[in-house]
Amino acid sequence: MRVILVVERKHLFPGLSPQGFLAPDAVNMNQINDRLFFAERDYMEVNSHYKQIIPYLMLQRGWGDEARVLCYQRKVKHTEARLGGMWSVGFGGHVEPIDRQENTDLVMTTALREMEEETGLFPGPDSLKMMGFINSDSEDVSSVHFGIVFQVSLDALPGSDDEIMELVSAQAEPHQAKWIAVSELKEMMGPEAGPDGGSFEDWSRIAVSGIF
Image 1 (spheres, rainbow, N blue to C red):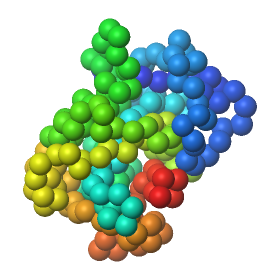
Image 2: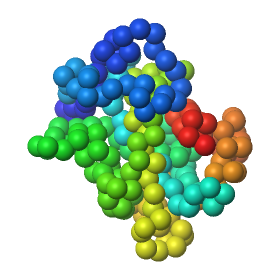
Image 3: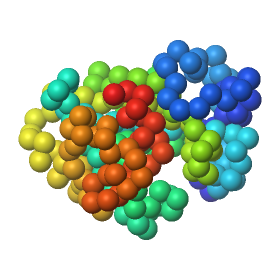
Image 4: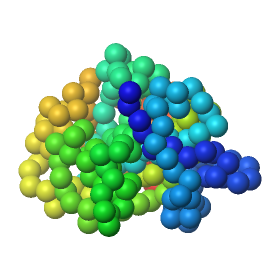
């Protein structure tokens, strides 16, 4: 049985549940720390009274007009069937008991672990900048998750864009991956407006519109 970190929705949002991209000060994670607990994932995937906490990592190189984001298309037979075949700008995963360590931030520990596991990269904690949160009830998969969005600068890592993309592709095994300039990415958020006529997932659309 796999257990993951969750919080009851009413503790995350005491009033109405705001939708979309939320500013970093919209939720005080320290204040709800004692409301977080580990629960069986299978049960939580079908229970929208709770939100699963997910670090969502956007890999970026360059800034301003030179900024580009590493995007990938999930395989059709993906572990999360509801996202199969869709494009994404974010890597990440659930907070698990293995991430509990003394005197460390639980979410940051998970973010760094997921970064290494999913991409094969370890740019270090200083490369991560928390940009805000994602909360969306528009789709089944989104309705049971709560995203903590990190922008991850890979500028300090050695290697070309192609070399980093090849390393990440070998580790994550997506259907395909590519660097996309932010200026182009913003125009790809509509249905079937992504590469090769594909579509970006709900969270990617929210993160891109909220950050860029």
